[in-house]
Image (cartoon, rainbow, N blue to C red; front, side):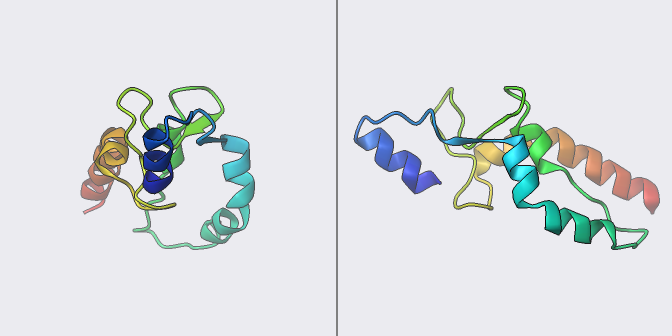
Length: 102
């Protein structure tokens, strides 16, 4: 993702199609999430990372920060600093939940 964005910016090409819909994401990973639902471990915390990434515009998940043109991903699944910043509050919540269970 970061490389695709960089190439487009270098060629002065638009990047406004570097996004996906929440429906497409849910469809693509439906089997994975269904399998996760069958895992029954009391210490397992499911973290919805798509919620923060798809919060800017309803139903749309942007793959880059449109304010500073930084990618949210180093590849298709690993977050950059900008991507992690979007998830800061949700990670705090996850860690808070984990600490409460101790």
